[in-house]
Length: 516
Image 1: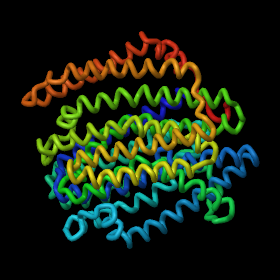
Image 2: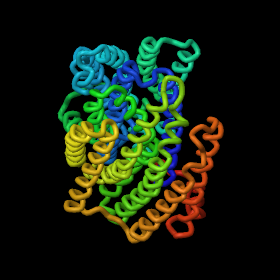
Image 3: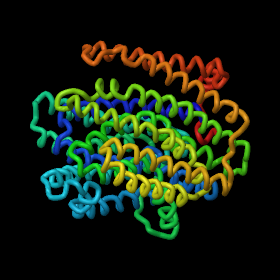
């Protein structure tokens, strides 16, 4: 599981780093004015769809169903089942895209009510409609990726999302060179989103993945209806962090530039969340499904314990690092071109509060597969809905007094509400299995992360605000590298991790599903 986890995490890290480059260039190109707010509101809608379908979300329903059909009826029947899923999802998303295009003014009004009565809403509607072709391509991409993951083939699915960011970066680079007007630049970027989705689909079709779903058919029979009854709640629940950001954007849209500040702050949250969260959804679901189906309590405990250790070990130091280094990170990544000093300060403050919700987001990613493996997608959905309501209610209050910072705090509170709900429900229904090794290691991981955070706090102020950009880059790089080194050393000293044992695990040949 650790090998597969690292494969997916590496691909996700590469995609997120490209995402940083993309968003830094968007900030320089569009700034944080009405054009940027309109584009980012529309782009946030696309991001919700991406998480709703991809990055492990559909795995929650597809993988257990596909494995169950294959084990019961054989490979050929499983391929036919997958072909019906692929054809039905593709047809449904084309129809949904057409309906959404017609209803887009209403949808933008709902997710950004503050735009009503201004030209910003019209810009957001136009940008969102240009992005809609991505929705039609994302469905088949996700089904093919899920089938590969079910067979333990994670490399292609881990790295294929890079094409999305590569296409957008190429388009932004050309627009920056041409010094394009902000309105035209946003229009071009919106159109490029659909092209990026097409490139990803073509890459998967060029591989053998398409053979896993044959013959291709559209079907709404009883089996398909049962599948989608399970799939849709799981897909919505798996996109919890994006729904919380939508909740924040609904309230933030009434404040100029607040949508942009929250968007850029959240992009920094999505780096560690993607590394841990996507890998959890992609790797842990098939692991737990096999363990639960076989009735192997030890395997269930092992998978849940290692997932919790990995989640805590990566999310906690990332949280502390983002809180302590919020301002220098935002300054280095985004303060260019149209993105000014006031934008940097507002984004950094929002980042500090959003970071407090990161452990909760990762905890949700670690807990949800235990429900999905038991074919329960409604409990994670209800937890997500509860977090959404909490975020909206608090954002109305805190946003009135504290602006974007208060809304960011509300989003973090919503995440913790969802996490606590899942934890309480799971403990009472089937009990999360945490083995003795995890109970011993987790406090040591927390101690090592706290020490790393203290070190970073002591080194703040090493780079004066007026220092040259290269100097700030070097100082920040040294701080982060020192923090990682100290954290790794403390994990070894405290006995929370054995790097020699980890290296031996990575040297072993990887197993595919057929070998497992």
